[in-house]
Amino acid sequence: MTTNFRLPGPTPLPPQVLAAMQREMIPHRGPAFQALYRDTLAMARDAHRTTSDVFIWPASGSAGWEAAIVNLLSPGEPVLAATCGDFGDRFARVGERFGLDVRRVEAPWGTAIEPAALREALARNPDVTAVFLTHNETSTAVTNPLPELAAEVRRHGALTIVDAVSSVGALPLEMDAWELDFVFSGSQKAWMCPPGLMIAAVGPRAWEAYERSRFPRFFWDLGDAKTAADRGMTVTTPPLTMLYAFHAALELLLDEGLERVWERHRRLGAIARDGVRSAGLQLFADPAHASDTVTAFVPPAGFSARDVLAALRERGVEAQGGQGAMTDSLVRIGHMGWAHEPEIRDAVAAVRGVAAAMMKETASTAR
Ligand SMILES: Cc1ncc(COP(=O)(O)O)c(C=O)c1O
Figure 1 (tube, rainbow, N blue to C red):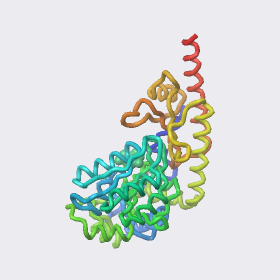
Figure 2: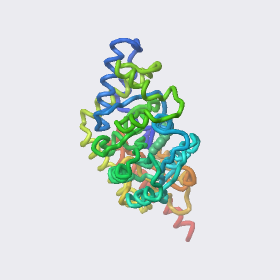
Figure 3: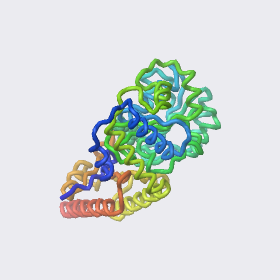
Figure 4: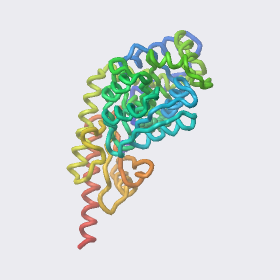
């Protein structure tokens, strides 16, 4: 039985990406690399809908939090972290580790940050110079209303720093039109690549902030990355195999067309949520802000996420539990990146089968 790999990251790899990774090494300071890197960055700019800079590092998505902080801010600087789940919390905690003055605006897990709540928090904290937003809160399967939130931040005059780890490349994201200042992601989500790259897009206001920032930095230094990228280079030895993969994935994405990709994810999200509901299970996310890249549901009464995951595995579906305090009380099904209707319908059928069996067991023991 082939596994229906439905984690919300890492995600399945398209055959074109797997094939690209078979390529031999090339001189990383030669013209073939320069062509590859320039082409990759140009496609990555298109995928972010920006004409600003995009850079790539060998790292996982979490590095984006640190790269944003050490390049754009200074010790003690007041920032507002908008949190509605585990990843938003982590972003805030990274800020605290670096000695930022982190204020929070929080929404209960399963709900989104509402623009009015952000506006009020900004009014209460007029001195904040940056706002940390999580576009898609993977831990709760909630998509925050990013364009509206970014508009509030712009009105305030602060920087909009966006964790787009489980959104960009799958959900609509318009870096320039929405005036986002710094957007970062990891290769293993919607980008259809293995884990291993952190991708960051840097807008003009972020560059101004970079000039003011007083954190020491080396590996994440945006200025050094730009000097190198202008020559088609990276500062340190580039992760060649990962760049072959990302190049192939971006070609696939742009060939399909971003709008079509976004539409495909809208369809997949709807199929996943309809399937979970029709299985008699409770969706976790507020339906008004349910994510189209990941779906979270509550296990049937009397069962844990671990039970559901084990039962799904027996039916050939690999899903994931919750995070933090919800580790064993939520099940998450990923549908981002290289995901299409047949696999999602298959996963949904497995969820239905598992739920029916568990509910039957509960009914028979109650008798
Ligand atoms: C929204 C979000 N932010 C940050 C991360 C951290 O990324 P990584 O695990 O690649 O470091 C993840 C990973 O799932 C995520 O979903």
